[in-house]
Length: 435
Image (cartoon, rainbow, N blue to C red; front, side):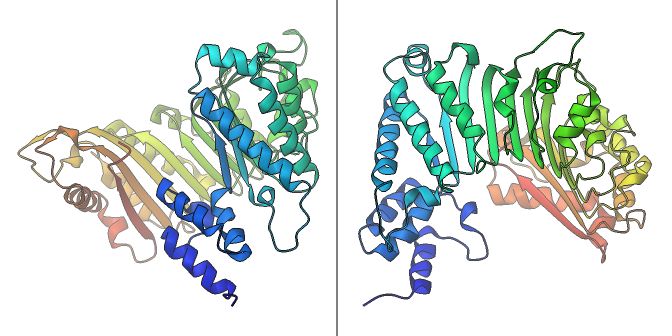
């Protein structure tokens, strides 16, 4: 007797404790759940097809070198076996892989030498990358690839490895690329690619040419990005010799920009990126010093910006800068949602005394409260204030929910106009786990 698909879906949702309102991509599969899903693979083709969507949606190969080699060999064997499989009832595993991550962050120097610099271990990784490229050519396989190369020089990596990375990036089916901790990446890696989302974390590109000639991406035909994520130190991608036209080519279609304390060689780069995407940017996420908000021209001419997320330190000067920012940035009148994320740092009280005394961190908050709740921003409907707290200074430590409740009450007292507003939705979030 065949079970209806709806019942199989419900069984998996219960097994994974997934909220039906959320997508599968939001669910984090634990080790215990993975073991249960592995058993479901053996029940029937219908159960198998549903289970592999959770087991293989995100494939990450990381850890020690021996563990990475085991996972690499296993995945390569699966993909190779499926290439000759012809079944109408079995869903290929390659077809459900959306993200593939290869991280050498925890591999020692000797392991890196044997893996990336042409040792025996190189062959297994090259084979896996070649099989993934075959899947991409067939229209299946991951749409996002993440590489963490543990601060390796691209020029020192075995050519057989970098050539496979190059072919993957140039696949017409690969749309998201994330590079982390890699040095001297050739700009040609992005040449003629179809990447629409690029994430760089401590990634440094080779400088091609001289200071009197176009550098970096000026030497290639760059992709047109719709999302760019920058963090850490980024060099060579947007070099001092690059012409403004390169920024236009790369960022003119950008709709999402996430900038987490990223630094380029030139301080002007953030402003130039914003100028290049002024007609397209819809969501901006900034994790920068509040002093940089004093540059009122930074968001000038943002015609389509609807969501603004700012991550700043929690201090009275920050509130003043934010108030000035929202007062003078008249081009932000189309904002629909604002999320302000503060880090309040260490809390110190005796005998677990609550409240937490957030008024000291949010001095002069009434000015920002009135500005955001006023009719100055007619389209603004959602305002979120989140705060990260470190409760280790509270001794003995009170219950987590007591600290969260006290902080939320204090935040609402600090922003009374937003709390009382009937036209704007005001939400407070207290984060204790990540502080």
